[in-house]
Image (cartoon, rainbow, N blue to C red; front, side):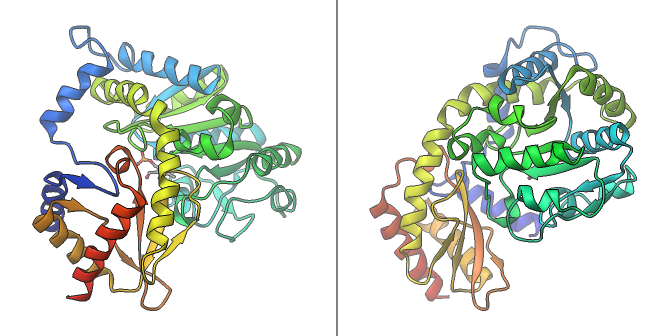
Length: 366
Ligand SMILES: Cc1ncc(COP(=O)(O)O)c(C=O)c1O
């Protein structure tokens, strides 16, 4: 998408009175005002990771019930460190990944190119690996990675029993279980267990501060004190020892306070919105019901026509439906990811049906 198209889309979404998918994009001034909610702006900024960054690390360790947590500027860096720790501890440079996982698809294979690791795939099915698939791996692995939820498969989660069995299977083959928990925050209602019960199944857990809870950027790697001390050394070596990161830390602290208590409501309402969208003519929704506050929606039109109609609806009627449509392997069907958050909570089934029909009539007019 060109810079101009993106700016136009953001401006249109910002000006909308009602938003179905996603949140109202904030300006930089609004984001600055928001920081005060994360801590005392009159205090000292951090110096290479103390102050508000330490407060955030302690908060995450407490939430996940781990001995420690270490702040990272990106999840990409945090996961490199977790996986190389697994490789060094076990002596096995192979990592069990999913071919649709973030590490394989969206990080330019940093785990291989930067960290010298290689991958093996327990499964190519569009879900996380089962205990049987982990147990059947043909070579020893240092870590097994499970992405909660697996985004590129439609934000799908295993059940709690499947996750617990996968954890036991990883341990039984002498591997560590690492959770890519970029969106772990929104996985608790479906798993019906707390963040700390989930993290307790794993040897290391990564969480993101800008997904779900709406921080500026950043991530944490949580686990034992020994992992944390290793992570601080390797964070420095990877270039992640940033002089000051207080804006990211304060926005994450504010996001945890504001968003964590609301997630069950978002996930519940996502089920209502998904059912209403699935009833639109020609629509497909997956998974239905959604496992988190996000899911995939397909409609039988070209992606460009859907994006154009979403923008026109926003600019003419101040209603944001859903954009970011992509062509798919299913002939004639385009897909987008729907995120149900605060702005969608007042959308009833009737609203989705009525505005959905208006949106589709604009698509058909193109
Ligand atoms: C599932 C998953 N893992 C890891 C990452 C990496 O996070 P970061 O952008 O902080 O490197 C992302 C980011 O989109 C993600 O969605």
